[in-house]
Length: 319
Image (cartoon, rainbow, N blue to C red; front, side):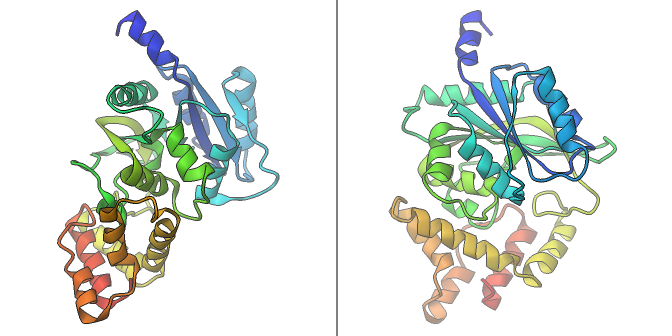
């Protein structure tokens, strides 16, 4: 990288939003990985959600070592996730970019640099002050004791509205986005209880552009008792959907979140995106309306087992 290009990159300030809660086991590793970034023009804004362990003391200790860390006053409020992330984005100063950060991951040294480079490349193509931009990347799974599990690639191809209704093609801790997306999705509306990564990705999909990076930018811990739609094998994934969607209200909540998103942004959506979402949030008009949803001709989830589980929910009329 030339000196001139490096100076141009370093002009961009990144706010790293770190929400903590009882994270004393891993928070040091995460903070060390952030402070060791090759790109150093960043601020870390931390909001603790009322930890009962030593998390906040550890954070305060790091704050004494560097002027990069700001700790917000939570006023004793436990906002949980995603509320704590949204609150950070509301209270932090305006900067060029923002990145979500989980307390128990570890970032690779080039994570922020790669994101800034990719976003700046895109800004040369689009009008940077007019287009919401969001960067997402691949990452690596590790066990709690540091053993590599597998690489998690991001979804290939362009992400459209249909891809983000019942599936999240990126994980929050890989996201970096510009201020226009923050304004649109957090400052100018109320996000509700939708998870922060899905909320921001939906916004970038409908109103801006997503920037892909196939490189892994972080080590993500997969806990033994966590089986999610993103990290399970096909067999476990099917079990996950039966347990957490068919036999619980998870799918119903997903539809409610989708409807809330539609209610907030439908007037700004393209006709195509609006009509696509209406297929899934409105009650089917008779048999053919129900059939249209069940036999929707495009994939809605990346894995076949997840797709089949979702279609089964449509078939039963659960969502």
